[in-house]
Image (cartoon, rainbow, N blue to C red; front, side):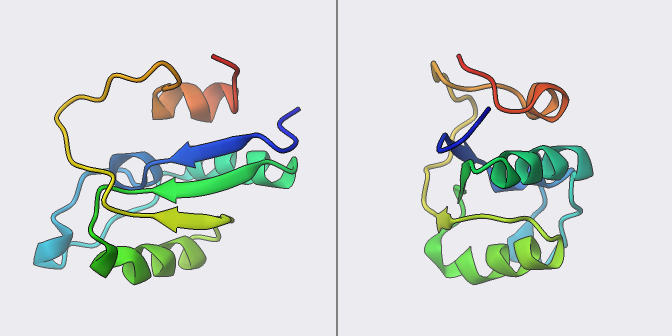
Length: 105
């Protein structure tokens, strides 16, 4: 049960299928498996924050995609910082999340 658990999920290349060049007006495509896992978490009374490395100036565009793709969420955070590798003790891959849902690390 995920009641009350906070899920922070990345946007590009996590909720989307590919890492697009949005600054060149490339349009991302949704990753339906990950989005379905987010929906299940949300509707099991979990909290969802979409946390992106995109700048705040892109937050409205991210929100538009989330609404279009029917991704339920409680908030958006931007300027996560851009890196080539993130090492985090509470991270799982998008594939594992879409297969297993919210798991305790």
